[in-house]
Length: 559
Image 1: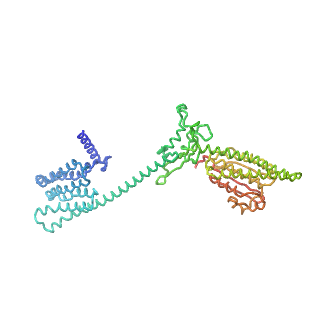
Image 2: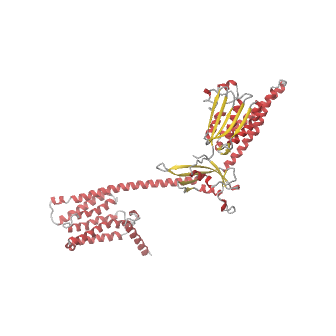
Image 3: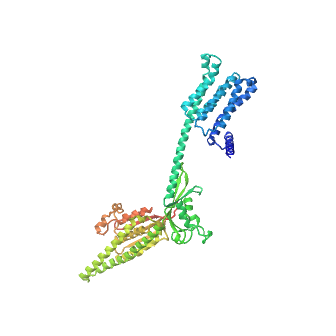
């Protein structure tokens, strides 16, 4: 069995060797050590064989000279030696004994046939290039190979008798040229080896980074899928598979059900062209969009974001899709929104009525002093409760939880703000009118957006006089949802407009009117709107009123 394995291994080496010689797919470094030694020796033997053919045609008498026959025989013996010795088991560098021995047959052939075939000394290029190209101890081996070439040329001269120094000097050119070729080959070999070492180092670093990236992507609690420009998935981590398993129909539901991917709050499955991945590949912007995967208790809610990435030349290389499982967070946010909605609409509306009617009763000239004091207590405590509600809402808007965004209709928020402020407007004698232009879907934090609209409406009522009008409008302007709150109040001076959106900034006109306020509402509102990728602006004239404009990006607009 051992012999059979050796035969098979040797056969494979021969096949690879022939493939390298025929410039096939195999490469020199893929050969075994035995194959590489044999391939390095083969050019010298083939050239000596060509010399044999030329000598047979041009000078057949040389075929019988002992030196020529011995040279050819030794060359064949060295080829057999190259292919038979187990070089893998011997110390590295031991194979260089073969090129140094090559100088013997080349010297014999050169000494016997150089008179008929000039230039045979340059056959020593083969062993010299082998020694220099090996990269093994070049400072020692290259000079030794040059010395061997010199000995190969001079030895026949010494054997023929005491040579003339001028004759020895005349034979220096060929060994010197051979040495120069060896030095050049050694320099290029060492340079190539240094480059190869650098490439291997970079490849090792790249492999380590790839493994690190794989470990990170498998560790993070975010599903990640990488898609190339052809739409093929090149990487998917375990979390992505786990999350999207909820969207795969079960056996009971049947494969005809298709992927169960829904918009949040909808029971109608999305067609494939509306999936986040397909939209991202089509060039549409996908930023923290919420989808529901699956149905029932096992359904998961995910926040999906897509980012393009570029190759080294700056061209588009593909798209990365990240899916965060926000099921628990969304449930918590909805519970918070329900609670804050109760505070906003169930508490603030009756509190506004209590305060309004308390003011009316307090203005009654027939009211006794004791009753008026009681009314003031009622108003003071109602105002205290209203302030507490406002503080809770402000904390909710500016806290970390406000970053979670869900699909919502801006027009609906404007209508709700008009309804909740209607009683306060009526008490103040102000006409409140709301106008909406269909559904305006945005991706936003409901609590924050409700607070922004409520604050703008509250300010408009606060700074308007009886008999005036406050108008609310929600409309579409290209890719923007635009909310405007317009009043006919005291207005803001031009020099004060730059300060109204800074914290604690209030205009001189407001301070002169002695209207209560801390100057935080507009600053917080602007921060909330800008966090949503929008803007909050004001246009105003003193004595004519003010118009505040909120612009928010509509959901799912193309990038």
